[in-house]
Amino acid sequence: MPFHTVVAGDTLLALAAKNGLDSWEDIVNASENASIKDTLTDPGIVKTGISLFIPNKVMKQHPSAIDAKHPFKISRPKAWLRLALKGADGTALAGCKYELTVAGKTTAGTIAADGIIEQAVAIDTTAGALKVWTSHTEFEEWELKIGWIDPISEDTGVQSRLANLGFGEELTAAVKAFQARLGLEITGTVDDTLRDQLKTYYDPAEDETALDVEPPAEEEEAAAS
Image 1 (tube, one colour):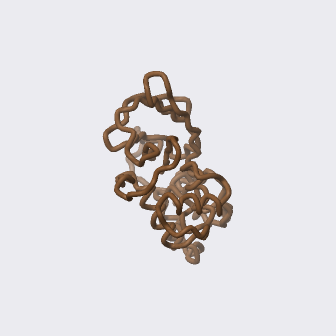
Image 2 (image 1 turned 45 degrees about the horizontal axis):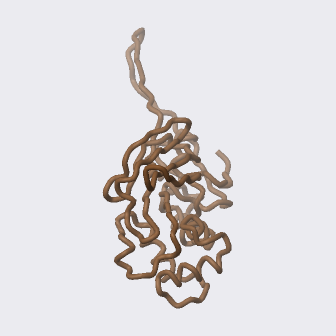
């Protein structure tokens, strides 16, 4: 298999499954990827535009008797889509009704106390839609782009996460708005402190009310992983 240029929506999980590999780590551990191995730590996130070597799959052998039937069961690989739903004040949107649509299939339910929605999806899933009712008559909708986010070590990864949280598309302005929200020095510069805070904000287990910061204007936020 030649080198593959990563495009939006690619993940190590999906690339491994598509090419008949046993594990996404087969890609990570290929010697041809040694120079970028330290960036390939998340099976669901890979930087768009990088050149990635995909090893050839190895044909499996299975001893069997002659003139006998030998059934083989092949299961379609699955991955977990995990969404953390939080209000503008940082608390989980517990108890709200939701509908999640992926690959034409819609599931409905009530958001758990931790604000987490989990759904098994096909490993090559790249899109979906989420609707959440904030009252009996009002709801919010989000278009989900799965696997479209760069690593947080990249400025593009920071920008996409901030945009996802409603801080805007322009990086410097979004960084300043996020720094203001968290009570950090407003520099507009992406640094390790900002990345660490953003990681914390994206942690579904973290209650942002504990950060003692001023929430923005009334709005709802959804973070996908």
